[in-house]
Image (tube, rainbow, N blue to C red; front, side, top):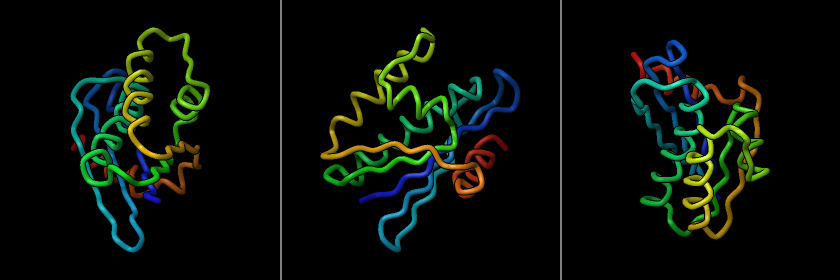
Length: 127
């Protein structure tokens, strides 16, 4: 199982944004700080999950993927496979499509303090 920690950050709403992705495969760790352009914080959080899934598609295509995020909004939308917010629907559709390529996909909310690495990387991406 691949543990994937994601976080999105935005300076302003909208503002300069970035995604932080921290991946654990056993004892091996991978870190990604990805600039995202001008987005809201919620959009950055969704895109962090999408970018993480894209990385996993390329490097871990046959693995069980467990995403951990400190964004309750993103986790709730993905778990329920539903949002009323029209601007989030394309993000949800992309996550559903990409997650379906893995044998098993899980998403779990974690407290911000447990998401230190991804948080640091997301902030690094907007510096």
